[in-house]
Length: 289
Ligand SMILES: Nc1nc2c(ncn2[C@@H]2O[C@H](COP(=O)(O)OP(=O)(O)OP(=O)(O)O)[C@@H](O)[C@H]2O)c(=O)[nH]1
Ligand SMILES: [Mg+2]
Ligand SMILES: [Zn+2]
Image 1 (cartoon, protein in one colour):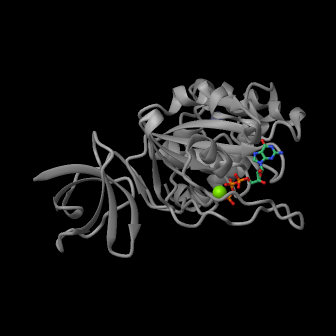
Image 2: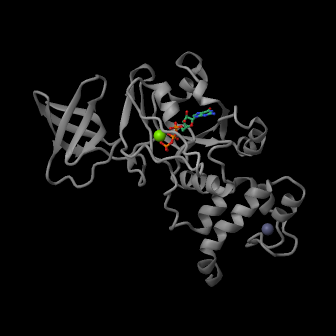
Image 3: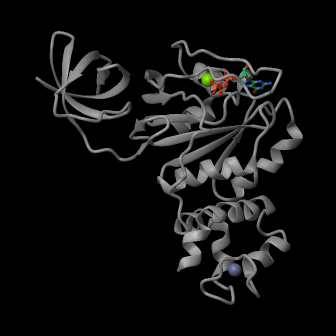
């Protein structure tokens, strides 16, 4: 009998597969000709008793590499206002990556209890069109997470964010399966790496799949291009169309409306600085054109 399911975990060369529209789990091997199976993949498999064999990987809607996960509907990107400190360049780098991959992102601004005054600095992302939720995740309980459960219902979700921001804290509130919560090391405030293995948890209550991850500091943006950068800085678009030069890079060109908007406070200075920083990476190629 042919069944369809989703890969939750990978152990060496075995795959834990949750059958779709049921809660039956199967440990599967795979047909030799299948090369690359990721957590999150939808697969066709055959099985005898509890032992399965994956015979086909269905087409992916998307995938990311670090950690390797396929078919993500939503990234919940957690930023802490403090412990660990946030960094605007890192935030934009992460957001650019998911913008390029065309994966929806919701931002949780966490640890409001530690530095409530910092929250407004991060709300610039709300103005850019990202849904932002301000939270103290350590106090969140299943009973008052209606605003979050609405967002996750029926989706495959990946928790992203630096080590120590509160990903596992949220994951644990969402699901009963044990996810280890670490503590921030007081010494360097960098948070210990506690989450190593990537698995999907099926949250029956929300009909959702959830991946806790070990932090997103390893995003690979080596292939970034000027087109990607220009597409990401969406708030520049309404101004850049009026720049004097149609190929304006918004650096030192005369009569640049993007720089004008930064000066008038219509574009956040951190965003413009990050634009220039990202451009540094691709500038050599750009200059050749
Ligand atoms: N003050 C405060 N502490 C929090 C809050 N949310 C989480 N923490 C604490 O922050 C520490 C790190 O939380 P985790 O959930 O383990 O962080 P993580 O993002 O999973 O970290 P890694 O697994 O290392 O990537 C824990 O000690 C949590 O209790 C919050 O809203 N306020
Ligand atoms: Mg964790
Ligand atoms: Zn310009």
